[in-house]
Length: 70
Image 1: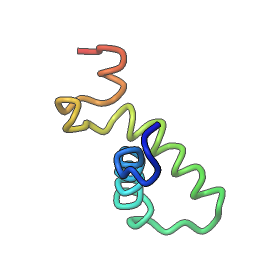
Image 2: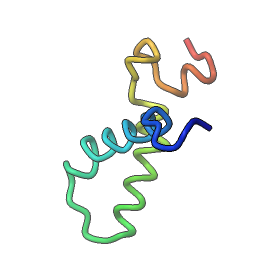
Image 3: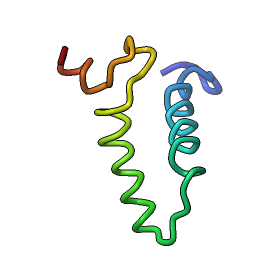
Image 4: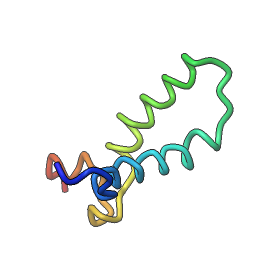
């Protein structure tokens, strides 16, 4: 743990939430909490980790990097 107020601890999560909001939340309207929960789960576990390429991973998905699928 770093010192209190260190901005680098939150940087990865802040970036993820920024991406989540810009790619999912702001683009669609959700009528129920259940619909929103299902969309966030699908985004996090399917789209973000298994389908969406990331520039910091050499444009591979997180899943490909983790399991070395080439």
